[in-house]
Amino acid sequence: YRDELINALANNHGRWTARAQRPQAQIVFCIDDREEGIRRHLEELNPRIETLGAAGFFGVVMNWRGLDDREVTPLCPVVATPAHEVCEVARPGAEARHALHDQWRDRRDRLRDLYHGIRRNLLSSAPLIAALAPGALLTLVGKLFAPSRQAALVAAIDALWVPAVPTQVAVTAAADDDAPATPERPRLGFTDAEQADRVAALLRNIGLTTRFAPLVILMGHGSISQNNPHLAAYDCGACSGRHGGPNARAFAAMANRPQVRTLLAERGIEVPEDTWFIGAEHNTCDEVITLYDPDDLPAALASALAELRRVLDQACERSAHERCRRFASAPRDPTPAQALRHVVERSRDFSQARPELGHATNAAALVGRRSMSQGLFLDRRAFLISYDPTQDPSGTVLEGILLAVGP
Image (cartoon, rainbow, N blue to C red; front, side, top):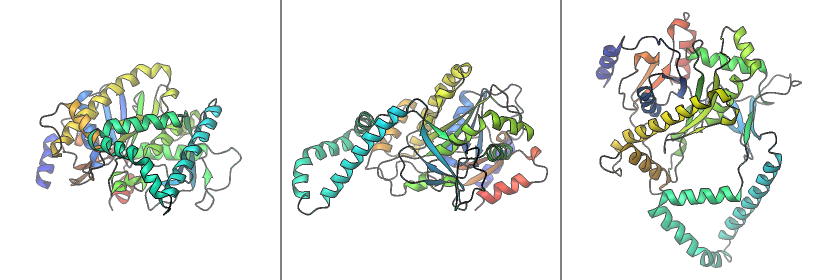
C-alpha cells in the first residue's frame, strides 16, 4: 500500500496548478479519513470549490453549553483544558418562544423521569408493562421494518411537543471581564483579541491567508446512530469524541465579527468584505449536512449558498454510493439516491451495531497543500491535513501540526 500511495502521489505531482480564478467556496473539513471521499466528490462536481483540512475543533478550545444542556461539555483535544465557555442562546425576539420551549421540555423530562421511576419499582412495573405493551410492540415493529419512517415520526412528535427556538452562539466576553481566563475560572466567551488570535492561527495553519472565497464553510463532523457501542469513536477525536459542529459554529461567529476582521488585518490577514464564514456539521453516518445560522447570511450571497447546497447534496449521495461498496446489506448496483437512502436506514436501524465503518481502513496521513493529492482516489483511507510550506519558512506551523496529530 505504501508503494502504491507514493507512486500515485509522484504521478500526480504538478497535475494541479494554482487557481486562476477566485474559488466559489472554500470548505474546511476535519482531517478525518472519512471526509476524504466527500471532499473528492465536491471538487469533481465543481472544480471551483476548494477543500481544506484542519483538526476538527478548529482551534477553539471551549466548554460548550447547548440550549438544553444542563452541564457544559469540553469540545477540544483531550490534552487541552478549556478556559472559556460558549453558550447557545435564543436569538433576540425569540424570548417568548424560548420560554414556551423550556416549559414543554421540562414537562417532557418530568414524564420521562416518572416513566423510568415506575419501571424500576417492583409493584408498579407490572401494570405499566401491561398498559404500554401495545405501544411498545408497535414501536418495535416500526424499528424492525421501517426504521426511517419510525425515526421521522418520533422526531416529528418531539418537534410538536417541544417547539424549536432560533438560536445563536454567544462567543464574545463582556467588555468589563478583563480577568485572566483559567480552567478554574472560565470566562464566558472570548475577548476580541482572543478571537482574532484563534481565527488567525487556524487560517495560517491551513495556509488560507489570501484569496478568500465569498463563502467559507467550517465543516465539523459527528455520527448519530441507534445502537453503536463505540459511538464516541465515530465522532470527532479532536473534540474528545464528540461532535465538532459547535466549534465550527463558534469559529464562524468569531470570523464574521467586524472587530475581529479589523484585528486580523493588523495581523496581516485581509478578509474581503464580501466573504462570509458559515459553521456546519457533517453526519458521517447518514450523510446529512447541517448549515448553522443561515439567517445571518448577507442577501447578496443567498444564491451562492443555494448552489452550494445543491452540490453538497450531490456529493453526499456520491459519498454514500462509495460507502455502499463495503456494506453487505446494501442493494446491488444502487443509484446514488438509493445508496443515500440505504445509509440513512442503517443509521436508524437498531440492529446495526456498526452502521458505518469508522476508521477501519485508515492507513495514511498527508500533510501539505491539496494540490498534492487532489484528483487521487484515496478510498477514504488517508487523513488530509492542509499545510502551505511557502507560508512557514521556520517550520513552526509544521511542528505544531505534527505534535497535534502525530500521536
